[in-house]
Amino acid sequence: MFGIMIKLRRTCLIPLVAIFLLSACGRNPKEWETPNMTALTPRLQTVFEKTKTVCFGRFLVDVPESTDVVWGKTIVPLDVSVYPNGADKVKGLAQKLIDDLKNEKAINHDYVPLLISVDDLTQPEGTLITGYEDFQAINGLKMSGYFKLNNDGVVINARPLRAAKDRTVALINGIARRLRHRAGHEVPAEPGNCIESAFLMDTPNPTEEDLLEHISIGLRLKEFSDAHFSIHVAPSNPDNPEGDSLETQFKRTFADMTSPEEKKVLANTKIFRQSARQIHDWKTGFEVLMRTPDEDGSFSHHDFRMKFVGVPHDAFKPYADIQFQTGVSDNAAGRTKASLTDEEALAVWDKITSTIRLRPTRAAPARTADADSGPRRPLGELAATGRVCPQTGTWESVDTVQDIEGGMRLHIRAGERMPHAISHGESSLWQKLKGERSVYRAATMWKLVDYDDAPPSRDIAAKDSADADAGDGNRTSPKKEG
Image 1 (cartoon, rainbow, N blue to C red):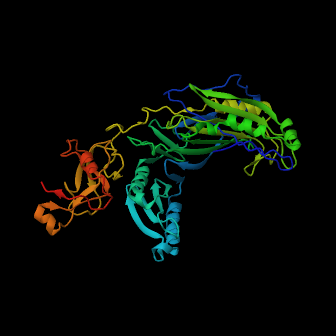
Image 2: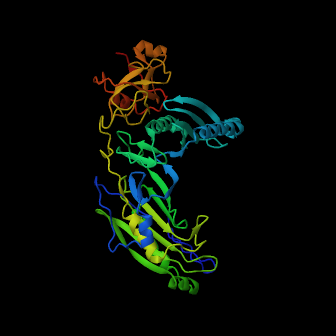
């Protein structure tokens, strides 16, 4: 979360952190409502004569054709980094992690190496490295998948607890399989997220966890190298969305400026707008557009910000921020003179923000686990015990669990929870006399092996829930045979 921080350093006003919001539920949402939109000056008309559409996350924005797009951190819902033309580099990063984990020891595991396992993957091609999070090695794991995507390299990082290892393996593999290469100008029609050089298609039945999306990009105007846009999109705060309100933060910040030095800075700060902003029927936005004064060590510059608190649990209406600053050098505003006049800065702001919109798709991503929605998942898809089944079909346990009840394969419908593997152990003499057997249930990884649409021979969900009072891998109450 970004807060408005106005701080004095020799009566220097630290720039407002500025940002923006986006999105609407409609398939073809309207542009941002921008009354009294500032007209482009002649030189800006030349800059905006040719534009391009940039796809980021679930959204689009139009910018001058010469604009450079700089990608920041991407979480969808794991940390995903794409290295354009970096397949070889990613191989090197994988080996470095292996070496680092081998060289460090876990105190709580008798000084064993932090490295736990290195697994080669084929769909897609890659390596999954698992180690302990740190030398204490109590509960945390460090899991990183290194994949080749055409000529690009992809790294997917996770930091799960040990109890969530299997589920995280399935999540990493699922993200890697749904990723495909994307040219910079491509605007995909499928539901999902645009990230750097790639597109991540939605799962057919996304859970709330799947929709925890954080996307950050920067827009650098080539003709005005000191003018920078920053865009950040994240889930809205379900507990306190108003805590992210720009209007509240702005009023509180300026109310706290009571010293003579602070009042002087405020008096010399030019505020162009401080008002609500709206997109389509979404009315949670607010913008503050201002220009700081010249100060000791800092040039006067524009500091524009827009922020929407968003709608909790709605990927189409996230929390979002946009920042536009001039006079930027070495990633700091005010280091150089602003190349845009006040009128031009307002015009650039209005022109770009008015184009932010939801990316139209052929179908909206599912909000619930609707059976068999979306395209078929590829054979070989993995899903761990406890996850929602993404595809009706025959699933096979990939673990070597002996005496699995019903065999190694089960028919599971989309939307059902992936079950535990139910197996039988050696019966005690007393159990044999009573005609009973020891029953165990263990978390496992399931692999899709067939699209067989035949009805299940038994109720998997009911069978699994019947043993829900037993922990993973623990002995359950004895069951009678037959």
